Image (cartoon, rainbow, N blue to C red):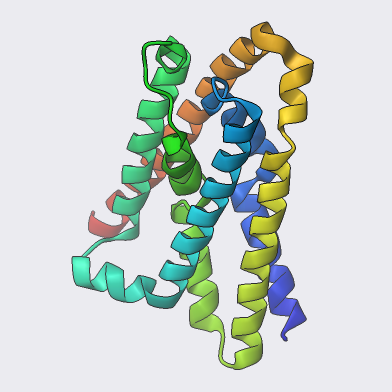
Length: 201
């Protein structure tokens, strides 16, 4: 196995996914769930992220070419999706007891586009494109697995923070998470616009 490539992939994905930074967003989105459903949401989001990243690593370029999708379009779509979620967190709609609570937040926006977002997808595709032997592919696969194990452990044990913060603390955390998520969304959209302008003007 190419350990140098493993280190490069690992560091790149750990920075992009930012597991500690996901904790407040994860807690905000799962604040109405009990501990068991929160653990299930953590597992579902990690499994979806793993599946999406592996899929795009293997056939991502073919998918993009077939659908005529550019990277900036993927980034803008992810940003718009996150912005809708952020507005719900900021306005308190996510806390509405009349809403049906499901584990769907584990899939969207946690699994994608927060974990398996444009950055992680494209970075993985570029690493795969640069690999030229079995050792390189094994290093990339190993790094992806390790990253997702770390993310799962961080989210799985984030419930400890819930017990410390109490309901009032979780409400404050939800608003802060909404603000952070909105900032991430706006940055993704801005990056997409900049890329589009550079490419077509």
